[in-house]
Image (cartoon, rainbow, N blue to C red):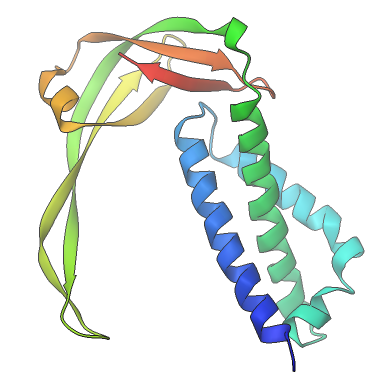
Length: 179
């Protein structure tokens, strides 16, 4: 019995799961998008000499044009999520500070809701909304935050709100509370 397809499918789903964790952690970290992506890409390139003999067993081919992107994607996603996770969960509670922010704008994002007709068919069945605000930080940066509808209705553009942040393990601020 060959385990190669099973291993490959497990690795794809694990990469997708870790990528989802990356999105959640990025949402609560005040960092530019290219920093964790750069860390992941750098470590993905560095790991290639160590893992290039393993990839033919996983993918079933010796072609570097297939194995190298697989390595870059898997190692890159895992290490960048690990970077954000260590920064988030290693945040020091003693470094918590409250920052006064200004709401620059607010908007709602429309998403399509689908319902299942049968095994292979899904049809559009209305819409649902997510509510977001854009806040301005004292240092000039902007951050987009998703809020529940009850808070969205009470927030006015130009109003000031408190944001509790902590210093992460790698020095990037982590959002812990929005009031």
